[in-house]
Length: 323
Image 1 (spheres, rainbow, N blue to C red):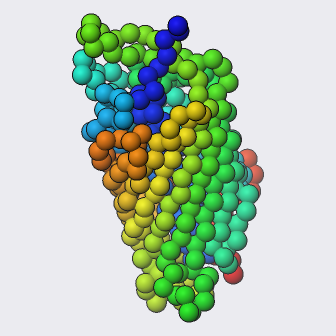
Image 2 (image 1 turned 120 degrees about the vertical axis):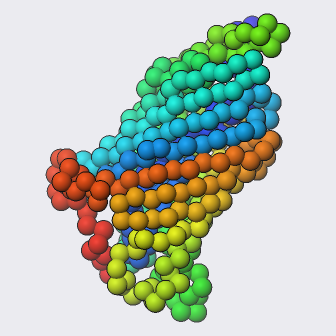
C-alpha cells in the first residue's frame, strides 16, 4: 500500500493555511478591516510583513506544533485589478526534532467586481496559481500546481435608518476559495517515533474549500462624524474589534473550524491586528493559539512609487467618497 501523509498533519496544515488578507477598502463611510485568516473585498497596493501565527497545541490526531510567518504583496495593474503574491516560512516542533522550510508560493489576480458606496458594499473575484513544489518537503508544503478561484465580499450597515442606528457600526465580510490540485501530489517528512528519525513519504493532493466570514465593529460610528450622511473625514484612524470564523474543508475529511476574536488599529499608512485562535471542533485543535499582523498601505506610505496603477488610469482616491 502506498504510504500517505497523515490526516492529522494534513488538517493542521489546512488550519494554518492562510490566504493572506489584502485590504485597504473603503466604501462610503466603511473601512473594511484587513482580515487575517481569509481574503477581503479590497484591491490596493499593499504588503503584509508579516502575518505571524502560533499554535502551541497539536490538532486532533497530530503530534506537531507549528509557528508560521506569512507575507504577501499586492500591486494595482488598473484601478480595479491587482496582481498578488504570497508565501511564508514554517517551523514545526515534533517529539523527535524540528523541521523548517518555505510554504507554497501563490501568484494571482484580484478584480473589484462590484462597488456601492452609498450602501457600503464591495465584491471582488480572484484567481490564484499555487506554484508546484515551491514549498518545502520538510514542512509538508510540497504540493502540485493548484488553481484557486475565489470570491470575497463586504457589507456595512451604516445605511440603516435611525430606528436601527445601533447596528450602523457593524459590518460583515466573507470569502470562499476553492483550491483545486492539478497533479498527483508531493512529498513530506513524517516522523517515525520508533526509530527517532523522519521518513520521506508521499503527500496526496486534496481538493479543499477554504471559506469564512467576519463580524466587524467600527468605533468611529460612535462619534458625531457618522450620522447616515457623508463623513467629515475618511474613515481611518480607528479601533476595529472583530471576530473571524475560518473553515477549511478537505474533500472527504473533517472540516477544520476556528473562531478568532481580536482587534485591529487602522492608521493612514498601516494597520496592526491581533487575534486569539480558538478551535471550534476536534479537527481545529486541542488548545488556543495566536496570530498578529502588520499591514502596510503602500499607496499612502510610498506615493511616489505606488501612487498610480502600473498599466492604466489613476489610482482610486479613497478620500473622494461618492454619495
